Image (cartoon, rainbow, N blue to C red; front, side, top):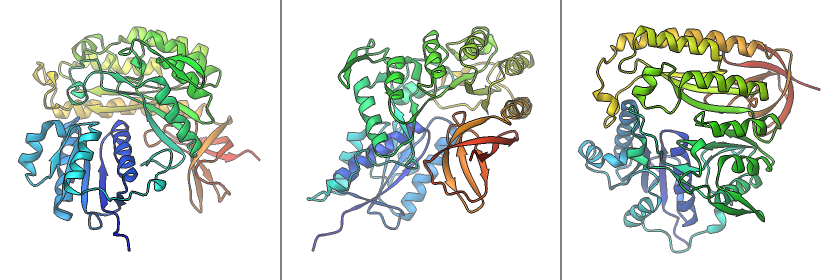
Length: 439
């Protein structure tokens, strides 16, 4: 009688880029015959993939490591917080090993040291698309690691290094495997998606018998040939992004851009060392919308950055009013250990940060409400995420999973997650749309 496969518990924290790292480690574990436990009690060993970007994420990671140690006792730590090994071990000296982000081989070596792989791995149990932590019908596609920017509030280059792009052929092959396995939406992620291929000098690669450059436009075109939605995240508004808008207008990829602008005041942007100025961004947005009227724009901003005066905050509000972005997230500035912004003068009091956050979100909520109301009466295609007895939860091209709104369809329709269905928009609020299927 065969011995049962050793069981690995796994906790994944942080951003979608971290989620992709977790999926890759889980895929390798399954390829080597390990089982994946769904509880601490059922695991022989636990891997915690941590986030270390802001203080709240560090606290969550340390608490999770502590929970895993208390419930299981055998824990390997990986991810962004792993670069601060001394801090991890000071808080939790009982961890078995600590590795940094995207250190797949080091994680596997630690697992092998403390829980040897079974001698007869059942590789047939491994699906061709690998192990995924997202629902079956959508998946994150990471096209590069690291970042060449040195934004003063960010420590990503310290955690993940400079930009390292994946060859376009490798990315497209992974995307094909995902789509063949039933994925209906590809969410392209990296730290700086618009810089894809810069480090490789846009080196050419063979893709499906064609020679393509390792560059975002060529990658987007190739992904557009697959039978799935392609959505772009974390795209800085460089001039090269102009080349993507016609692809969106033609339906090659979704007319959706996630641009982390962070602020609009020129002085604050310089202090942040951000690669954009608000006047050029507004001009570019106007031009993009002329080419592709259906374009949805999403962004994130920081309020309360050191040196932010009432005038610079009002400049940000004025930018919001003029840009009329569809989806917006906002955070108060939070010091991050190792970030150069910590030493900047004129730190903003916490109470003022919160007050500005509320004012910011009030302005954006009204804009979002108006933008969604404009869609009432139109028809669109939506992708079903979930089905209950009373409603169908879906998303349109304008909605990324987990961060944007939903399209809610009342009634018990015979639909399943991953189905595409045409709907008529019948109502809206500040975040979601309401619809009914077009019969």
